[in-house]
Image: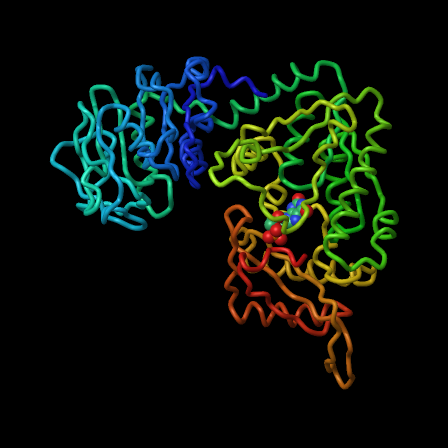
Length: 521
Ligand code: XMP
C-alpha cells in the first residue's frame, strides 16, 4: 500500500524453509527494505519489475536432484546484482551454474557445526573467523560435491567441504548453513557484509516509512470516510494513530466493550484516543449484550463463537451509523500476508477458533486500508514510538479478542469476572514492580472453576482458586513458562489473597506450549 518503489529493494526468493522470515528480519534490522516471494511467483517479468538491488535464495526442504524441484528463473544470474544462496539456495545455485550436488550418504548434517576459513580472504566474511572458527547451524541432506566454474572455497566444515563459496567476479555467494538463525551466533554479520557489498544505503527507516504511509493513505482514501476497529492492542492503535495523522476526522474508531476487558482498560483506551489524540471514537458499551449471551455457557468453543459472532454484529451496527464509510482499516502485519510455500499441504487442525473480523469487509462492501502490511511486529512498535504513542502502550502484552472469557474456564459470571480483574491487576502490578514486564511475552491470571477451603484469621474460607500464567515466546506459536523466583511467587500469592476478596488459593501454571496453549481456553 505504501509506495516502496523509491526504496532500494532486496528480493528473497522462498523455497519453503521454516526460517525464511528470519532472513527478512535480519535485513530489516539493517534498514534494508526486502520482500519474500515464493519461487512459484517469481517469473522473469516479476524479477525485472521488482528491480532488486540484490537477491537471496532461501533454504527449503526439496532436493535439486528431484524432477521438477523448485528453481529461480535463470535471469536471476543475469541481473548483474549480488546473489546469496543459503542451503537449498546454495545447491540450486551450484546446480544451475554448472556445479554438482549429491545425495546424503554419510554427509548429511543437522544441527551445530563449525566452519574454518581457507587462506583466501572474502569481504563477505569481514569480522568472521577471529577466533579461528565460527559456529553455524546446518540442516542439509544433499551436499555440493563440485562447485560451479568461477567459484572458490572460503570456508569448510567437517561434513561440508564447500560450506562457504563465492564467485567474487560476479558477486555470487553461497553458504551451506543458515546464517539467519540464532544458532549461527555471528550470522547477522554476514548479512551486514552482504548488503554492504550490494551497496545498500540503509534507507528503510521508520521516519521515512511514516511520511510515505501518510501520503499513501491520503492518496488511497481521498475524501472518503474510514472506520477502524480499535481494540487498544498495539497493531490497531498504531494503525489508528497513523491513519488519523493522515486524514484526521475522516477516521472514526469503534471500540467495542464486551465486558470482558481488564481493570480500567476501557477508560484507558477511551481517554487516550478520544481525549489525548482527539479522535472520533465510538465507545460501544455492549456489556449487557455479550454477558447475557454468554450466560450459562461453559464450552470454550461455544463461548468463542458467541463472542466472535456478536463482535461482528455490533461492529457492523455502529459502522452503519457512520455516513459514507467506504473503507475499513485493519492492523494486518507482514507475517499475515506472506504467502508461504507449502510442500505438505492439507488443512491444519483447528485448536481454537480465533476471534477476528475476517470476512467483514466483503459482507459490508468496504474496501481495506492496511497501512502496516509491510511491517513486522517490532517495526510496528518502532512506528508507534515514532508516532508518539506512550511506551506503556507499545510494550503491552498481547490480549486476546475474546478477552477474559477465555481466562475464566467454565461458566462466566459477573462476580467471577470482577474477582479475575482484581487478581490480574495485582499480578501485573507485581510484575511491573519487579521490573519483569518487558521480559515476559504475556502474563495473566485465570480464575479456576473450583472453590477450595482455606483459613484466614480464625475463620474458614471457601473461595475460588486462581492460576497465574507467564510465558516467554517469540511469536506466540511456542512458549515456555517464565521462571519466577519462589520469593516472587510467594509474595504475589500473599498479595492476591490479602487484596482480592473471593480468592483463597493461588497456583502457578508451569506448562509450556506445546503441549499446553498460552490461554486456558
Ligand atoms: P494460544 O492460547 O492459542 O494463544 O496459545 C496464542 C496467542 O494468541 C492469543 N489469542 C488470541 N488472540 N484472538 C486474538 O486476537 C483470539 O481469539 C485469541 N486466542 C488466543 C493469545 O493471547 C496468545 O497471545
